[in-house]
Length: 214
Image (cartoon, rainbow, N blue to C red):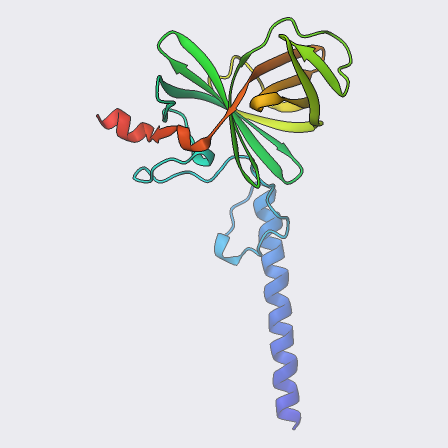
């Protein structure tokens, strides 16, 4: 009986020594020393959530929610190339504003999931009133009602007109017939986009990898 008790004590002491050694190795590594990574304890701190979707395999066709730089968006009349993407995150909700170029034309494609995937073609809007925007407004001869507003953190990829990562205050206004007015305030700078929702099924997508190979 004493023999088994001694073995138990020895095992506990050995385990404690291993834990202390692993912690020492982690401290030495953080201080700039060299340590065997196989002996380090797992990092207890969870990694921050990324607003970017997982990288898509080259042989996988794009979807509206996995569009990447270089992918092609065809609306039936024009082909556009995705040249930049601004991704926005507010709590658990994420959405994207893609910069598209086709010929000498630049447009923007907002992709946002709200149950189903909402898709809208928008263009830069000029002449929006300055100051506080309220629950409703008229712009370009159309009436809009506030749908949602909040603060979102943004990340950027590609050519997005010099925009930087940070936080933006946004407001989303909806009008009749799928009309959409998007307003973003960053500090004293205000940008706006106006356009309309389109059926997701009306767009054809092609991988940029396939396009480059052709």
